[in-house]
Length: 137
Image 1 (tube, helix red, strand yellow):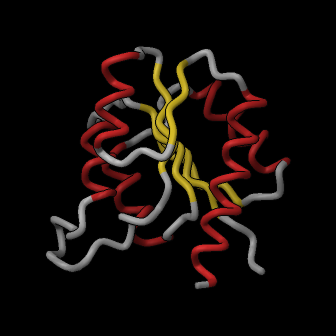
Image 2 (cartoon, rainbow, N blue to C red; image 1 turned 180 degrees about the vertical axis):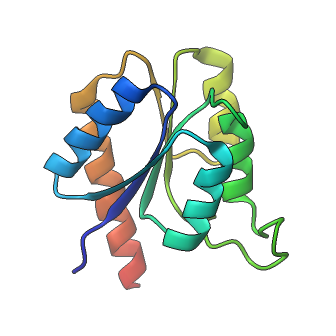
């Protein structure tokens, strides 16, 4: 069994570092970016097992990133998406309406800042175990 990779897409450097430390302490590999466009590229190239995605990013909003990751076809290549099956956990400082929109677009879960790290790490484990089981089928 290989070590799972988690892609963190967050523009708050302090939160990015805290998430990185917590997720690496769980035994997972971490990729990080504060850019939506780079997140899309990393998801296609590196194929992480999980993405943690902030909604408010400097270059592209997270909802657009979520829609593009979950689309069946990669709009850049016209080929089937390599990221559509990756579970995505959305995090944001703004809540109710955005939560509904992200769930409609395919987010696996949603957390409001400040994040309850215990609940987030528990959910990360759940999703990665589920992903591992589904990949064995």
